Length: 340
Image (tube, rainbow, N blue to C red; front, side, top):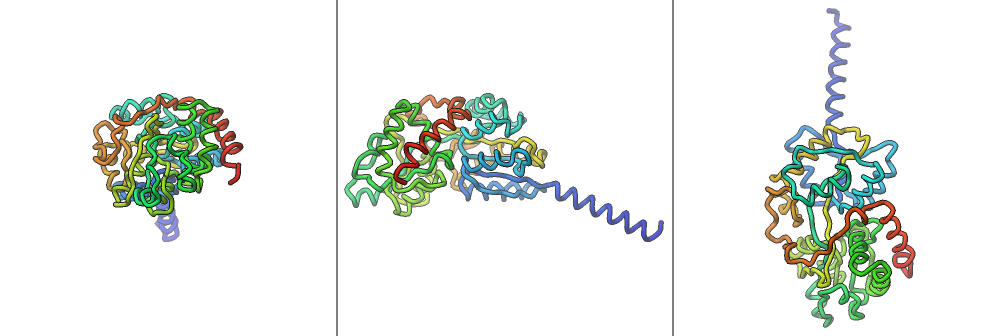
């Protein structure tokens, strides 16, 4: 064999090897807290020969990105964040059907999420909506800690409440949908218009309000209860509240993107992250949600949902494209776009 042929064959082999290596990538959107996202990526890369390109986005931002890239998907997998935008993505055919072999290990509520979406998304964790308040701030100002939704309208709380924008945040959209189901639509918007007088900021991220409360920048942050628990566990003076009238909850979800460039890598991550061992590890990264794997160990500090008055949250209706768009448009017109 002459030298030129050997070099050509060698170059072809190297190119093939490089191509194979390049194919072992995963483009991931993570809609949980940054620390949780980074922990998942580091653990996965340690166990697999797959490089993960991760971007952290709130649920609403993630949905917008997936929708914008529909003709040329740049994302393979979307993990975490509230289930409503995942269901909307499924209804819009932006995600693909996948039935993981891990499904038999999952909680009924995780499987119900899959069934509702035509198996285009699945539940990975659950958590109830509530808020966290800074005990020191409220005590110093002589403000009675809010225990019910109605208490949040107390004039003494003017400028002391933060909640996210429901356009970008799945947490805030869950709050919006919860109030509508709890009070009725017109009553819920009347409540939010009154609440607006006490809101100092509509944040981009769903967990940001309670982090601000923990740092002493605001008195109350309306968030998922597990996000408030995370701040309390870190030693901040945060008390966690489940609203007395009742509250909604999330089924944090995961979806594979239709037309994913790295489908096999996405399936590998999908199956891996549903495992009991991985889900039991999450508290180490500050995650206090209820895991979807029946064999995973729930965090000791996680809110006991059996002690929380939960509404019968209609994921199918409030995760639909039409209903979600209606509520967000009305919120923009009557709450978010007024005086802000």
